[in-house]
Image 1: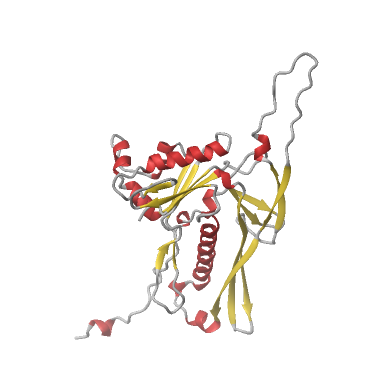
Image 2 (image 1 turned 60 degrees about the vertical axis):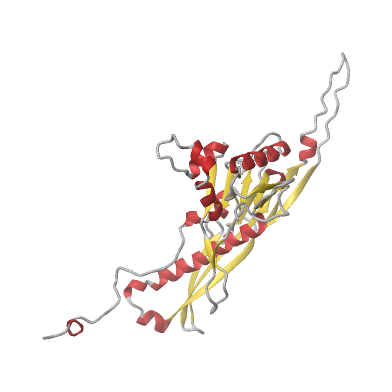
Length: 323
């Protein structure tokens, strides 16, 4: 009698393969700051002096009295969209020998795009999700909070809603009453919030009785509450993998407009250079060509952007919100 191996030769399935691309919603870099498209790689924008605009000069003036004359400084700020690139190859022998399920052109394009997205998130975090860049900052501690410190959200007796409302009020005081309207936090921070007794008590009479991003946003009066789920492997090639959440254990509250506009403040903007031929709305391009020297098809991706903090007063940062 023939054995199973005699009647079937193992081969790759044509309708299944495994890859590790992340959901685009895991990334926050393109969701927090409004995107400003630019036909030029660098340019300037006008900035009125907040100190002058929020200072009042008006006073009682008698008949024929002269009205006080206002004085406002006007300046400009520079943005410059650096071009970041990455490339992959499909060798002629690799392409000729590849099974159908691999779909190398599509798969390598997805991998290159994923690389760019991770890089963009890492750059955004390095520039905006750190201490020393926002006017209002608080630091989480395990016990004995003093001054600008607060009890971390996963510590018994902590008050995350109170802490966030306090920092929102501090930011509003610096910005003519504009409280932060968006929030981004690392996944570990969200886990602590979702299980926090204070929040569970507040929403216990809702339909599901489960803490969601929308419920936390509504509690704080925010338009958006975004959990950054994106991860990266920080180990060098060949070393044991080390995976971590890109935004770590921190939280940012910021005021931003719904869209770029004249005469409105914003914590920041993401300037993108889409003036190059074929560039998309996020300043991205994918180029493909055959490299004769390598006997391979090249797939090169690029993004041109500048994560720019426009007003450090419009943001409030919580460092180490959880242990």
